[in-house]
Length: 183
Image (cartoon, rainbow, N blue to C red):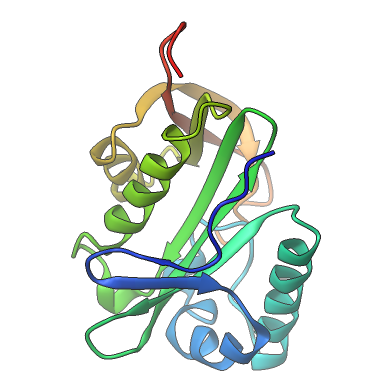
């Protein structure tokens, strides 16, 4: 299994492994915000302790190489910007992401996701990088298209977004896939 870099950067962002020390910044900027959690698989956090527990899980999955969650930081002012996670299997990379609301619609997450797509596709053993988003999350769908992913289809009753529904909702699956015979 190929492993992504621990620390990397884009034009405007630094990315590094998420740590529990960042929980207060995350809580203040997005984990308690109902607008952010709308399309996520968690409800808004009610306390910094809840966010700390999430970040402990991030540290644990990184240590065990089960997933690679990065914290994103703005180069311009050093502020917390969001998170990006890659789950790497033998031949594919599945991603998820969240950006703090004050930074929405500035192309920042496109930079980070685009960088991850380029990294994944540069490795001969990786054949696809993919992500899903709720059918109503138009901004996320456009972001995935902007980094070269193509819509593969609709996954019926795929994920529960508890801020929207207790039942699984439909999601759109996007992927960038190497052509047969290419590496």
